Amino acid sequence: TTEVIPVDIKAIMDGTSQNIILAKNDILYIPSIHDLEDRGDVVIHGEVAKPDSYPYADNMTLEDLIIQAGGLREAASVVRVDVSRRIRNPHSTVDNDTIGRTYTFSLKEGFVVDGTPGFVLQPYDEVYVRRSPGYQAQQNVVVEGEILFGGSYAMTSREERLSDLIRKAGGSTKNAYLRGAKLTRVATEGEKKRMEDVLRLMSRQLGEAMMDSLDIHVEDHFTVGIDLEKALANPGSMADIVLREGDVVFIPKSTNTVKINGAVMVPNTVSYIAGKNIDYYLNQAGGYSDNAKKSKKFIVYMNGQVTKVKGSGKKQIEPGCEIIVPSRSKKRTNVGEILGYATSFSSLGMMIASIANLIKK
Image: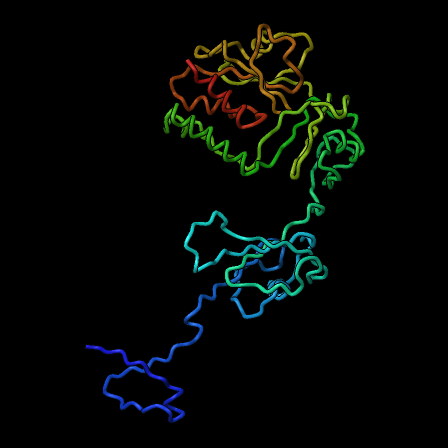
């Protein structure tokens, strides 16, 4: 059997202790003083060049760690740097509600000026370099189409609106159709998550096969229904929506046509005539087909808004709009084909609501 024999190496080497005769298969183990202590890494988060974990070293100060992490980034706040420290009390015999201690410092040129200069870190300390609330990177929006000076523009305010962007770009041209202007927006992670939740709900209600035939999925961009004409007439109103980074505004040319698609005899594009009702335009497409769902027809406008036809629809029809008549066909894929005629929808939520109305018996 094995046996452990304590050995005082220093005393043996000094000749003050009896030497030990080694035997076959003996193993002499000399431990390190560092094996007897827990020396965890220190971590730095936030606005530094290289946020990461770094090996702890004796007498490492907050300034040392910031330098090791490549220094502060441009967005870093020099008035708020926090150090979080674990609570350690190996002799405690009672429970403690406190789970940590935080120290806050201000910096100047990477050195502590408000707090404890030369603050020495301990194993497992975590440093948080906050982002300055006064730092804002450029945020760009785009305006295209019938505009005097189209292109990208940097936002100068968090409250910048449609009217502000059009004013920066010199205003619209004389051929612009403001009612048909469309805004395309980049979906945030939160918006994508909500879209996924809606699609999962639809999948449970309609079944996987139906969802596959509709070919609906979460997009990185979506269309926001706007009324640019009203926004320019009433700056700062609810119609004059607030922009956000990545927005693209497109102003089309004036158009004088109306499209008729879906369950009609001959899908067609005809001239817009003010005052004509929905039946006039349906007649220009040969009338309803045998499988038409007459009560479910709807209109898609150039700006992406969608509305159900009410009554004669005389006041709802505008230049550039598209009249769509859904089908009663048992082949569910026709719903997706019908929706393919539409230019765009104001949002995925509006699109899903429209689909639900179309397939509802």
